[in-house]
Amino acid sequence: MISLDLRVYIEDTDAGGIVYHANYLNYLERGRTEWLRARGFDQHSLLTRNIALVVRKMECQYRLPARLDDLLTVETRAGDPRQCTVAFEQQVMRDGKLLFRGMVDIACIDATRYKPSRWPEDLLSAMTLDSQNA
Image (tube, rainbow, N blue to C red; front, side, top):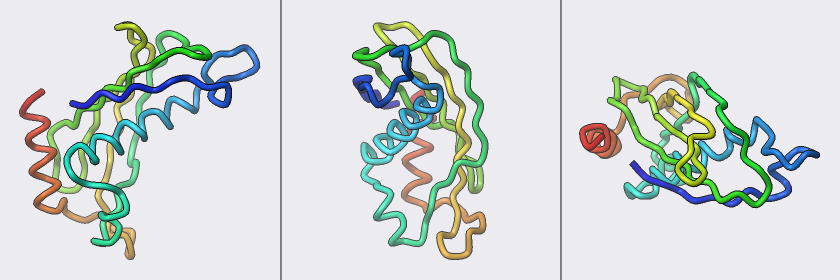
């Protein structure tokens, strides 16, 4: 699992100073990107290997609102990988309180054919290690 701290800026909010619902998806994307980076991967290098990671399915639960200037923590953990997909469990917290929870299924695809592809061995090992440490 990794944790990423984010500040809520005016651009993240609606007219009432509440984080606009779609921005939580951006926070989750940043969390998954940093999860990859913490394991020695980045999106650009994966693309040079003809590997793209795409959202296949998402389930979201909004619990409490985040507001302008809040300091949020995005927690990201990979579940057990399948042949070419993995479910990420993610949550957005403020001061230890759960604001948002997301389950995001990510698929590994061939970046030129846009077809499902098996996980590369090095990335599969990183996901397996993360799910075993859960």
